[in-house]
Image (cartoon, rainbow, N blue to C red):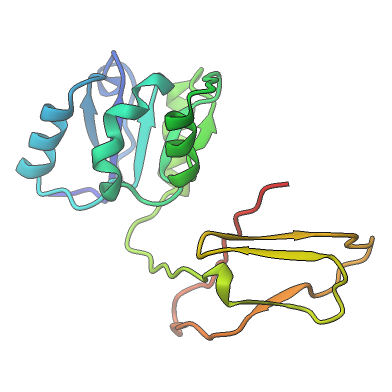
Length: 185
């Protein structure tokens, strides 16, 4: 029976043999360059989503390229020590909203993930093309299709409304609302 959170580790040593996996996690492990094994694991266990994917070596990111539809947004975690200039790897990190994390204490990381991850949430995308910039803003505005909007100018030192979305979205009575704005400075 499933415990809840499905966690995939891609690395050389299976953490479940060395560390205590929290009770609310179903643990899955594959070695780098094992896409056939991962595909078989997904089929056998009928996995529809992994709430987290832990990649010990960032160079293994290309191994998961064909499986990204099985990952939760913001659920790809890689070693914070990993650095790259490879455009393909940088694109994967950006598109998956991957998070660099400290892998030096795996037990602490597992405990942190067990209390901060959740499954079964509802998500909706608010498209940048539906953003209306406040009429008093005097900077430059450039819409980049459905991907993002670039806003440049003097924003002042006080907080003022800069934008709003022109369309409504569904809200459910008993579910919390949390907006995750993604921005680059």
